[in-house]
Length: 521
Image (cartoon, rainbow, N blue to C red):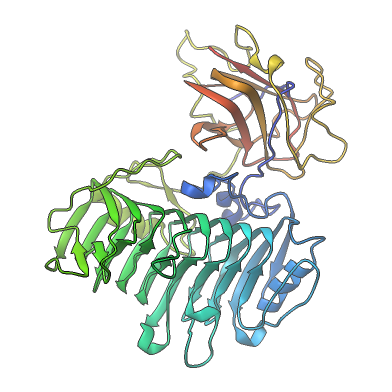
């Protein structure tokens, strides 16, 4: 068992990027899994944490969702809204307030930030009612079903998009959700997951998109090229005519998705776009990758994909399919770390993990679905040295060498009342920093790149054992250097960076960090 150690917040405590979407309802599996945090491009540009650290409320109607938004102190006050039941036109009204701008025909997240909407209990179904995100940032949507949203016929909502984003949207993570329609444009439906007019840093993960004419677009026209930095992973696209997605300009990363029954075309990279397409499984489909319906070409980098019963059309003036033997015609690098499942197991892994009400299971690259981390602080830390190896250090023993935090800087926000970065004294376990909630992040930063391979986290006197699950991050890239549970000495491969972040993603009480030491070896 890992022995909790007290720790120290050197002069180097840092940026409070609150961990994702758990709120205070830690007994619910939905909340526990959300604490794992966003993935892909949603980890960039400061990260995506939603309403973590704020109030948690329960809503069973669309009106109650709007009331929760409008009842905040400001449009940026963090809030987690737990949704249970069916949300529809009959129970969704416009609500007014200084911290919101809502509408009666959709769930409106307009000119707001720091919000989590998570389905709990028996599930959350948005029936014929779309979710509209406009001029907003730091939004998490998890474990919900959005179905049969129409742009024509009756009733109409959100331009026919299940989830639509537009106008300077930043940092959205949609996870373990089900987006579905019952036909195409002729039946009144539009896209399931649309982004346009300067929408960036979005991840769609472990979700199901099905039975629609259009999966989704990134960019509303060939000239709308301000969108991008989008990640799609471990999603199921099934019985979709086209747009999985349509990408105009910008960069998108698709990995470990299962594409099944794409009837006309799939990933449509055009107008100068770049698509990175890794270890996906394409099945019983047509023209799954290329540039289609335009003479303004896009590009792609392909690796490890499986094409199972995929047919390809002949190239033409407005069509440039990547197959029948897809080759890369560009290179794309992504700034975050990710672990690939083998393409051969993608159908089984995605089937067991993707969609709402699946227990929020995820994959760790082993082709075996994993249940959410229970964030038990007594669990062994998988990143700790093997206790049977006599050469490994005891996690309660401080590392040897110079503590690099002594010459580092500190910044941060969302401190709990009565705690301060500046008041923490080296070696004094009675002084500490605490997050505003049960989760949060603290960073050490230097003016130039510094090599670090080990940190020592010590909790304040009397609060040992409060820290549950954690991640250690390269703040600049979002790369996960280590993860586990409990405080103490944490080792990882040496890395050169200017800021290192200790992110608390689960706790059994209010964490109190007295010391955050950093070492080169």
